[in-house]
Length: 308
Image 1: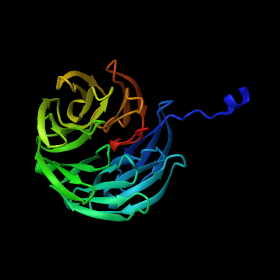
Image 2 (image 1 turned 60 degrees about the horizontal axis):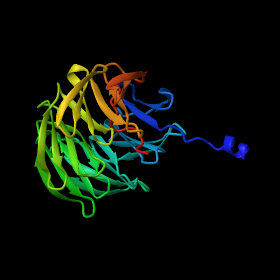
Image 3 (image 1 turned 30 degrees about the horizontal axis):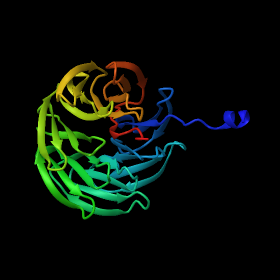
Image 4 (image 1 turned 45 degrees about the vertical axis):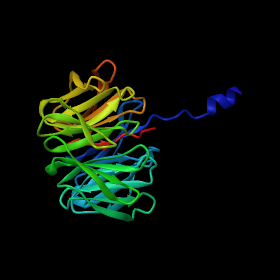
């Protein structure tokens, strides 16, 4: 029995995939050791990131490559490049891992891609300059932040129709959804606030003021805290999702952009563009507990850590 016990492999900590736009690479961070386990060249100015739910693949949007790259995280190499559109930026993968969605900043569309074949299933017209994307936990709904239209589109992934478009703040960019699929949180870059939407009716529940140029958001601690990166003052705003108000401001690196929560629901990773590193936050103590050097221009826009 002892031999069996000691030879049983332990579950590995998930990896974080950090796109380094200025150095055309992706840093693969071991979240167990909080160190870079490998750096993979990714041409095309990698920006958006979506890690498959099983943590095996990372999809990286490449605006200058007109699509996305497929990165095998264990092998640490690019296994495929997929042409999608002129201005691929925002990217997301469905919770069941079957679909990848890619926003085209220039053509005001979102492409739905089959994750098994990498064929484009459908191209959907949305608002101007679509950026952030998120798919509901039940794989049914796609939400798209339309930056220049100041709106969020709700798309039914059964028939690919736009069911509703709701006004939000000025220049929405990143967005996230809670675990029950009931609330959307939208970071509005130009109005320095977060719009909280009821996902079912796309009705505004609240508008919460944060700091300068909020870029993206992530939930932690059983969805009780929302963490929002503020580009222009090197900080992360912490919002109590019951009170719907900012309760703390955490200094991080310069020009924080992408943000993602570890599956432990407590560690929050923040990519700092100007500092070319990642800050690791403790969602309970609201402190920076580590800083990880990555590559030049760390952006990591999207869900860059596997959800399980």
